[in-house]
Length: 283
Image (cartoon, rainbow, N blue to C red):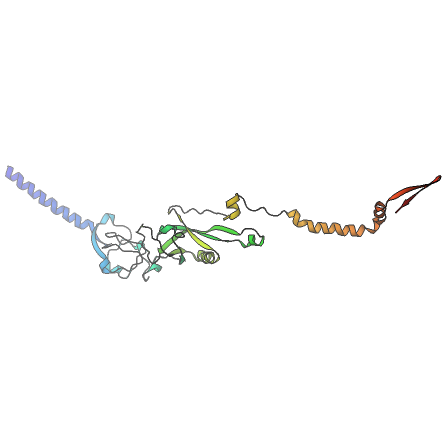
């Protein structure tokens, strides 16, 4: 009885193992994954890809099943080794490799010159968001002979595409470079080009999960040092001249009518006594 039980148990184990292997093969499907770390903007080649078994019930949406369908496609995001290649991570068919593949539709890439201070000590890395600050002079204040220096945030929440010639978003180590490439709209590109021509630019690093814009009026030297702007000249002073001129004309017009009293007021009169007679003499 023991021998028979052992034989039956072994047969049951073998049959269960075969059944499990069949179920696994049926429930799995080949999915294309990356065989190495691939940077954004790279054109895919067969050496970068491999196919692995993926459970049919958990295949991610947009996964690529045939490696031949990825020949010549370009990545618009970085991918790590073993990560599934998804359609959402690919640039449109026909896109050439390079930085242009990662620029979103309707946006433009524009490069500005920076240094270790302007570039936030190298912490403005690809994938980060920055604000653009310009320091320039206000022509309206210059006409009023007042201090015309002003600093103002002109662009907010601008994506950094690349620093120098590197566009990888996986590295978090600061890099001091002399140029930063930003992703902007055509209107923002016009503002940025004007801002760098009329003043000096600074990058302000911001939180990636904080997209809320903040409207500022800028800061002048007077507000910075005294807490308030220069007082404007009173309007009454500007209007005093025409009023004074009008009064002057009125006096000139009425002078002949009141000339006698004016002369009389200017004379000096004395009383002269001669005997019993008295009379006044004015001169």
